[in-house]
Image (tube, rainbow, N blue to C red; front, side):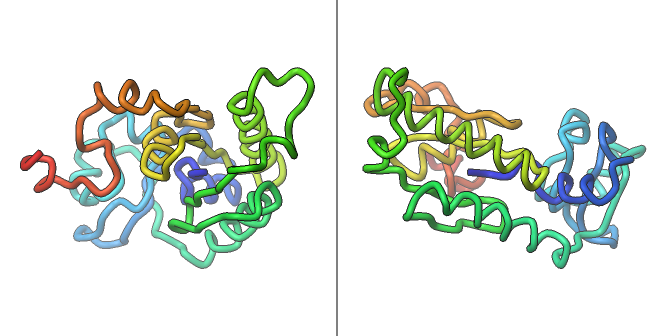
Length: 194
């Protein structure tokens, strides 16, 4: 589960006038970096980790806000509390991301209309992302796969507010056409080597 534009989404809950606007959150000096940005800002070419100087060049009319970590922690805790009711095994990866292990939970959640275990888990994960939206007000995306790495790639492809299932054995079909940089942990140096 990955919260979509988490810091921006949390700020929008505090100030709904930010909805629909390009919003960029980061350091307050020209030497800072973008911590989070809205999809409207991403449409201008802004990305997390980019220098604020470059972000201003790309999106001069965006709303710029400082990072307020004290605001976001409570939202993250509320999301984790919801997610942890769905499965006994979870791992926090960052403030806005966690891995949930649904292995063996299929029979617990299975409904008569579910075709198979994949259908069951995909339905349940959609219910989870909807519950996070309804109870906390935050959009989230999820990737479902047999490994954390593939699930992380799938959750990125599911954005915004979607769920992407990668059935066992079809990982190559998902990953094969993607740039190697889409894999978790691959930066510019490893990208060049690969």
